Amino acid sequence: MLSTPFSTTTITSPSTPPPSPETVASLITTSKTIQQLLQIHAAVIRHGFQNHPIVNFKLQRSYSSFNRLDQSLALFNLTPNPNVFFYTSIIHAHTAGNLHLRGVKLYIQMISQNEVVEPNEFTFSALLKGCCLETGRLLHPHVIKLGFDGNMHVRTALVDAYSRGGDLASARQLFDEMPERSLVSLTSMITGYAKHGDLVRARALFDAMTERDSVCWNVMIGGYAKYGKPTDALTLFRDMMRVKMDPDEVTLVAVLSACGQIGSLESGRWIHSYVKNNGIHMNVHLGTALIDMYSKSGSLKDAELIFNKLKNKDVIAYNSMITAYAMHGFAQEALLLFSNMCRMHTRLTDVSFVGILNACAHSGLVSIGKGIFLSMKGKHKIEPTIEHYGCMVNLLGRAGYLEQAYTLVKNMKVDPDPVIWGTLLDSCTLHRNVRLAEEIVKFLVDHNLANSGTYILLSNLYAATSDWAGVARMRTMMKDHMVHKEPGCSSIEVHNKVHEFVAGDTKHPNSEKIYMMLEEVNGWVKDHGYSPQTDIVLHDFGKRERARSLEVHSEKLAIAFGLISTEAGSSIKIVKNLRVCLDCHEVTKLISKITGRRIVVRDRNRFHLFEDGSCSCGDYW
DNA sequence: GTAGGGTTAG
Image 1 (cartoon, rainbow, N blue to C red):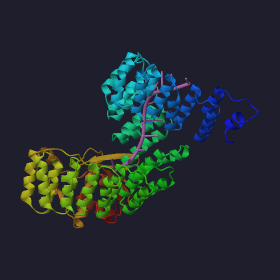
Image 2 (image 1 turned 90 degrees about the horizontal axis):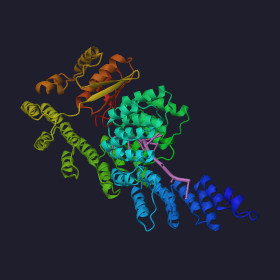
Image 3 (image 1 turned 90 degrees about the vertical axis):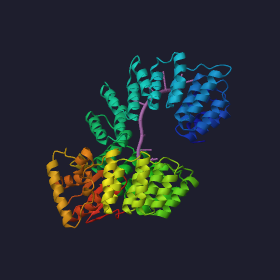
Image 4 (image 1 turned 180 degrees about the vertical axis):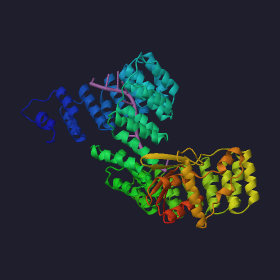
């Protein structure tokens, strides 16, 4: 008791008169720790103030601020006839803790009990904060009926509820009909657009703002980062720095995510230095974002350094590190972290399993992977999603257990997606299993699920087994059922500028030189006895496809550009949106041997480090 | 004595 100002000076000293409730109330507000607050609370009871409305109110607020909702609610329940202040505050405590249903219940209680407590505009602000769309729609008529819809805070909270919930039309109408816009209401509307991927509308509002604070910058940058526009995110971040708006942790987390997507180690390191040089607190969000950035930019070592130093690591930080190990093919390290998490009784998430199953898949650890997959539902009570099935299909298929993989797909509880069928077909090609591939393709065609990739895969398989009649059949089928698949796209960063290539791309200013380099490369690899497999397949698949039959996979273009635009001997780093194909993988190995360059390719699934003719994945990916 | 906008992983 001696450590608190309360106990030493005011309450326990026998020589001074007992404190007034007002004095106690003001002491409560100044308490810095939960321990201090508990001591003050004890003294409150000792002095018989526990029924004092203001003292109880303040105690409740303080408990809420320390996230002690249990104590908060107990005080509320002890208070006879709580007024609108007390109701509003306890509702706010619940909604701030994501317990909106209980907040609404308290609201219903206040308006339906015998002696009705009239809610005010503050009550609705509290109720609407972070609520879901349904709750917002439910409360909206109440707001109108009581005449609070003209209040700036309430109106903004409504705009926010609709806009977060995805009813952007209603949000926009409320927003447009506001008597005046504020920075906060604008940000709320922008957040709605940004969260739901309408970055054009978000940006239009953002550009029209007359004042901007860090929050709205963060929303806009974060929107770009989230919706696969990392270069836009970085460009906007540079604009932010140019106008001397200081970035905070939230900004940097978004920017790091963008750096990771691009694989831009240089920009990522710059952000890391910015954190160090500007005394920005390394919280778990920022740490996790750095781990993610470093691992996706190819530096597993830096990711590990951050992870080991990071305080208060949560499950997300662990997941990121496991994913990092998986991406780089370090299954044993991933398994070690995974078992540490299990030992600490950390509540694992679905992402933990995506990470660890991928780690197993990349190393062919079939029985361990199977065991972990089974433990998901059994021990951890997590229902596998399509992604977990995807990992298992990859694990089983790559390792040659094709029938097991196919059975798993046929029996899983979720609908298979094109990616999972693609994975399965890939495995059939790898293991030359024409029969199963045909069965799968027939299934896909019958169910209207086939895309151009499906036919190309089967066609490749026929070609690989010299079944030219099969190749011809696929050409016809492709003409009849043309469905497009995601185009391959690779990027490379040279001198702080990202260059993007799609298959067959001729848009780059240096295109001519790039194709000349490619010719040279083709000559080299032929001299090394390699003949490309894919060229024979794509001859006359209709007009569009004919243009593409001359195509070169995007990573080859990126590598060729890397070869002509970087110094001899330096590493080349490529980021690709799809998985690297067998042909490109073989060719890249040869290029690394012939040129003596290290070539790092990050594909959709993992890293490949090509060095002196071999790849870190051990040809297993 | 009570209110409105932003955060990470596949």
